[in-house]
Length: 308
Ligand SMILES: [Zn+2]
Image (cartoon, rainbow, N blue to C red; front, top):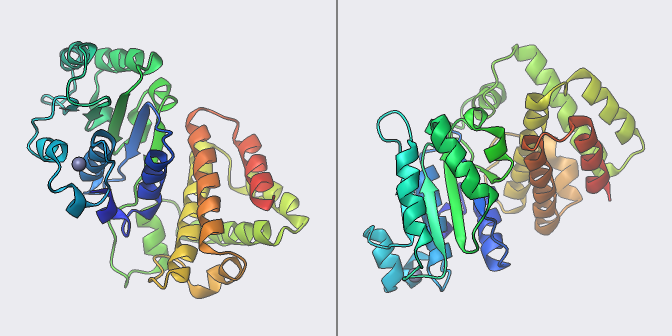
């Protein structure tokens, strides 16, 4: 169940659990797996928490629940799972789904479909999913999973809330540079990457201390490094990772990437609640990058919201 992933995927699971608790579920989620082995299991745990009327996120409690048992046995009619048929997901597979879901729900007032490896939707299938997403039906929730967000149609992306997972952990013995390259899929020159992240850390600290220099520094960083959408995504991911390590520190957990020295200013000036807020702000703005928002405007907005 979702609770089992709190430690390893804190940001993603907190996002999903809060949506459930506040009863503000989106019509569509896209889990960006980053090759994490748990992506499908997390999607299934989320589906279970939506469909079980008690919305349990804890396994022991749901062990005697009829619905959860049916879901485990794959006999629950209001949950459909679609996987590639051969190399692709084809239109026919979605037609069957749409036909099933046009009937009245019997077992639950909510229905969920999971599309695994959604980047394998062929163009006909992608268009038919798009139609489904464009005219959402109350109570039907889509969970798409992809390891390759750039292969998804932008029109589909813009209708989903993106839920990024962290990659599988690598050994603590790896250097900061090796971890950076691994966690963020960075292939550029080592020195440039190190210099860039040094500036990004400085930027995060300036936002915290609310110095007037922040705006100037923002412009400098934008000018020097954040030249396109990909780089903006990197900055946002980097910030989430950074705040997450600050959370790790406050929760007495091991730091994943940063040194105590890097995070000193932030942990001194924040508590768990304010760090969670910061992570949410960054993630919400990150989602707008996929909707093709102007990256300069987004960075301005980021600074304004975080310094408020
Ligand atoms: Zn249950």
